[in-house]
Length: 72
Image (cartoon, rainbow, N blue to C red):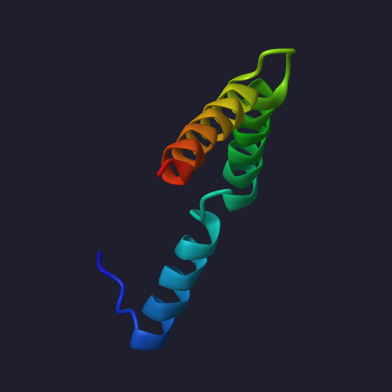
């Protein structure tokens, strides 16, 4: 037997279903934050870290560029 449902009852039922099926956005944000923190830590830790290598490479290239530009 079918029950007659008013439009307002249908909207209320839909709203209740949406409220209970929401995804936990806070958990995924926390997971992304942890992954990014570990990645950042991996870039800056150590005596010869990848970030330090990048800075050294930029300094060397800039030194070579300025030397070449200063030549007559």
